[in-house]
Image (tube, rainbow, N blue to C red; front, top):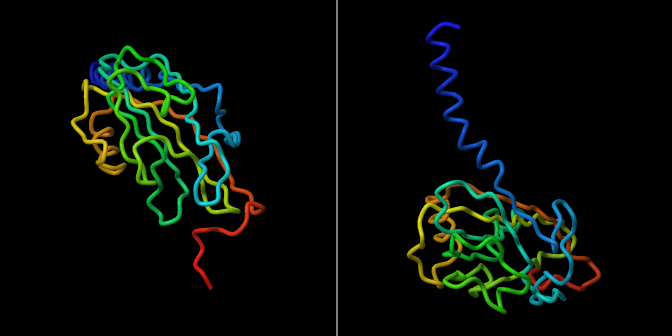
Length: 194
């Protein structure tokens, strides 16, 4: 192998090393399973939905080196309107934390963690509640951040929080679970009145 090939190979390996480390960053939950329907316990109880609106337990391991804090987001990839829907945003989770417990949105997050206003207009967890009859995918993500705290107000909203999270992310671990609201739950409260 000539010198040029060795340098190119060395450069390629050095560029891929952070990605290999990030691949080890994992998110698990006893309450959610990748690709399996979200249980009614974690569905919202607004707009005709009849869930318990309990936030699920999320646990992560092997964050990237240099992680100084975490953020957790829950995002509906298939929300009407084409821009998704933020269901939960938690920032400033200390680097020593490795989980958010079942029901933590109302029962207590790790010290210092801050919930940002979701697209339901409230700071806290808002479970799935899509219009009836269409499957939606919900992306639960833990973000490893390179800073201790995001300087953001709880009223800021999902778009600004997501921007700040992504600008400071070292890595992420995801779990995607679907939910389809049954037609049997009645008329769609979001449908236009005729």
